[in-house]
Length: 409
Image 1 (tube, rainbow, N blue to C red):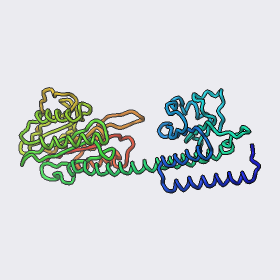
Image 2: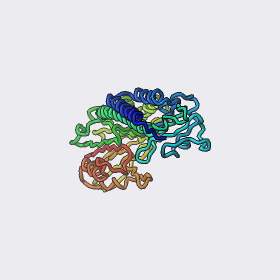
Image 3: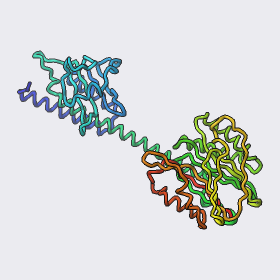
Image 4: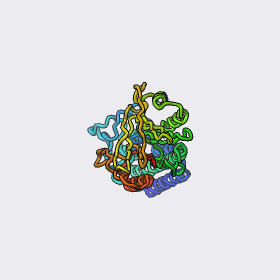
């Protein structure tokens, strides 16, 4: 029913304008969601005499962010998607529309870009003597007000999420820098003489679960390892950091590799409680005797290429991964007499596992040709990285990638 009284119409217009101005000022003051909802509730209950209000907003799921004048325990009877999203405009609820709550009279959807952002239910509205509620005259105003409040609350959420994401990003950047400090600088690895060492490390995310190390054990002996923790991200990085500390504490020239691997298995089991494991290739090389002693604990088989004979071979796995079982079975380290002009390339599975049309394909065929030449191993690694587009964000790569290579001359 139209209100033909100019004075009343003017009062209503002033009320709407002053209310919207008040709400806009509150938004500009960066008030909290709770404060904005309290003002919204006060306008509807005190100014418009609405007795019952439910405001549902879509976050990850539909959530009731305001319940006024209604029993909260009954809210779960409503399924927003089932019961309310069918209303695409302001609608009066009839008895035959089968909404599982009967205390509400009107549904007011808040829609943007044809998507429901929120849904308002109002009930127990004050009626005038002639039976027409003044709320009926303000339904579009309530919809506009609800839209403003919902968008403001969403902006608050997005701003808080941006702040949270920025904080996480900063923490990850710090974690990445700290992790890099645990891994030897490739520029400081031996690059001349009878043993040249090259390395490349690239986590798929800010931090990763790959790890390599190179340790001078004495004048004529070096130790090294390459590892891959199951999983990705922060949890894998934490396990890797813990493993690095244990390895550095235990790896000496005197400890047999079988003992070292057994103790590392115990430490990993203690820290992961059987929920994670890692694969590892670990070795000792004596420069004087040219003997390489190694254990491959479930890791990708390193490639060995003889540039004189053009022969390619692999150092296969001889025991299970670290942390896969409580107690390691007897470990027998393997020995290899390393001749001259030999290249040894260790790598993690991120290099050879490629995502192709949703399927994971694993093959060393894409890296073997890069070793089959007389070029320095450091150049071979650079060519592999360039060919696979590792630093350019190749979408087929979905894991950390690490390479550790040795050139024996």
